[in-house]
Length: 215
Ligand SMILES: CC(C)(COP(=O)(O)OP(=O)(O)OC[C@H]1O[C@@H](n2cnc3c(N)ncnc32)[C@H](O)[C@@H]1O)[C@@H](O)C(=O)NCCC(=O)NCCS
Ligand SMILES: Nc1ncnc2c1ncn2[C@@H]1O[C@H](COP(=O)(O)OP(=O)(O)OP(=O)(O)O)[C@@H](O)[C@H]1O
Image (tube, rainbow, N blue to C red; front, side):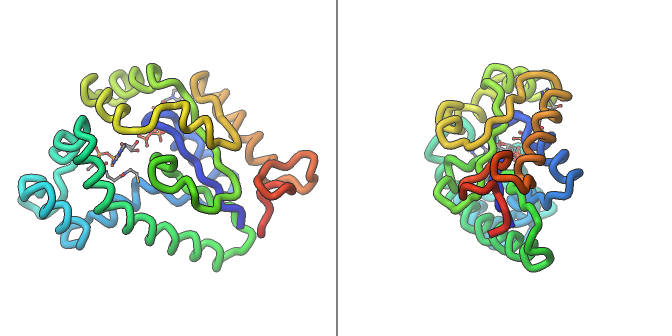
């Protein structure tokens, strides 16, 4: 099971790449989705968040008020650190369960972990390949404001709460340039898939010499 980490700053295009890899047959494990699941109403993670940030981050339905919590933490590094310390262990455990389940279902499956905070949280894990969706922060800011309707100050605060682009570039094995057209991103993703599943060592890509082949 090649285990591939797909990372990138907010609005870098990870979902676009993950969607294409899924079309090719990869199993995608989505960290943001796991975050939402471990924060569901009644969960221990949500109770810890309420204890740390106050009951005002819980709606009358008992769910997390995401916008409220986002406005409290982004722009305050200590608060982001405290939130991450509550949420990340549960995300790590659940993602490990999903990797194991994918392996049990098919030992040859290519598993892709779509994880925005790889450098911040999981850079030392034994990935077979680290793929970076890379578009400069200035372009990602424009996308957040123009495509997602985020207030510019909020978009800037969220980008600033993540490591700078250079730190991600330092740890990437493969960089997908997502600053061009969507078609260009998809073409690079198709090429990545071809190399990840290549049987010839000359063509393959991976950390173990023969491409990200099943271990
Ligand atoms: C603060 C919360 C409630 C805001 O929710 P919201 O619906 O606005 O955003 P969502 O969860 O969909 O995340 C969107 C993007 O924001 C960025 N982001 C989210 N959390 C963080 C964080 N702690 N640090 C830096 N960037 C973050 C990521 O790029 C992510 O892809 C939520 O993001 C959260 O609980 N974050 C802490 C958990 C975490 O670290 N998630 C990131 C992936 S593990
Ligand atoms: N060349 C490109 N490659 C990828 N996305 C692009 C490109 N050009 C424009 N976009 C747009 O940029 C946005 C990127 O958002 P996407 O959700 O794919 O990023 P993400 O990295 O998954 O974001 P998040 O960190 O919020 O989960 C999308 O709206 C997408 O349509």
